[in-house]
Length: 329
View (tube, rainbow, N blue to C red):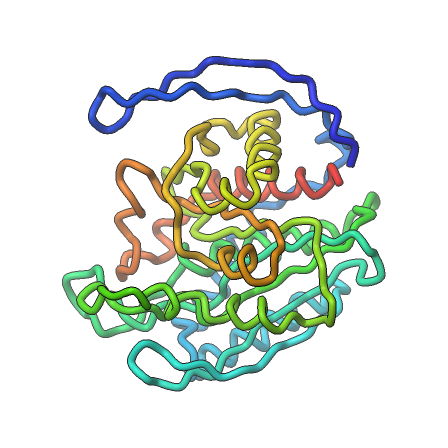
C-alpha cells in the first residue's frame, strides 16, 4: 500500500474517570487506495448468524463434543468460501494440570501471495464463570468472548470470496484455541499467571503452520460484538505495532465509526497478540472491548455473555473497519 497520508491535527480532550485526566490526541485523515464503495459489503446479519450458530453448539470448551462439533463446522464454513484449511492439533496443560486437546484452525485466502496479513480470533470458551455469583463452575456461552470475533472473521472471509474485486494480498484467518482457560479469579497470583492463557497462540507462534512463515501484520479481534462496546488503543498493540493501530483507528473514523474506536490509549491486555508479537515477531494489534476506566464489560466471564449482549451495530463497526483496512493493502 502507498502510505500517502494527509495529516490533519485535531486536538481532542478526554476526561478521565477522576475528572482531571486529559490527553492530547492526533487524528490523521488517511488517503485511501480503494473507495468504500468498492469494498464488499459486510453483511452484519450474516455475522450475527455465525455467532448464533456457534452458541447453538453449546460452550466450546476443549475436550467436549461441542468443541469437536464446532471445529468441524468452522472448517466446513471456510472451505465453502473456497479457502484452504489446515488444522493444528496439539495438547497443552491447563493451570490445574488438566490435559487439553486443542486445535488451531488456519484458513488461507490467496495462498501464493508473498505479502500476507493475519486476521485472528479465539474460538474456545471459558469452562467456568468465575466472575459470576451463581453456577460458577459451569461453562459460559461465550457469545461475545469468542464467538463474536469468529463471526466477524467468517463474514469477512465470505464477503471477500464472493466479491468481484478481491485483495491482491494473502490473508490467513487464524482461529486460536485454548485462549480462555487461564486461572480463575480465586486462584490468581504469581508470576506465571499469564502463561496459562492464550495456549493456542503460544503454540502457533512457536510452530507456525508454514515453515518460515511471515506476515506484514496481524489484527486480532476479541469481544467485538457487545452493546455499548468501545475500542481503545491497547497497550501491547501500541508497543509493538503503533503504526498499524494508528492506521486502523484512522480508517475507522474515516468511514464513520468514531463512536466505537476511541482515540485514547488503554492498558496492556493479556491476549493472543502477545505471543504473535513476542515469539513469532509479527506485529499484531488487538481490537478488544476494554475500557481504561472501567475494565471489561459486565458480562465478562459470566453466564450473561449470551446472545442478548450482541449488538449488530458493534459488529458492523468492527467488520467494516477490518474489511476496509484489508482492501487498502
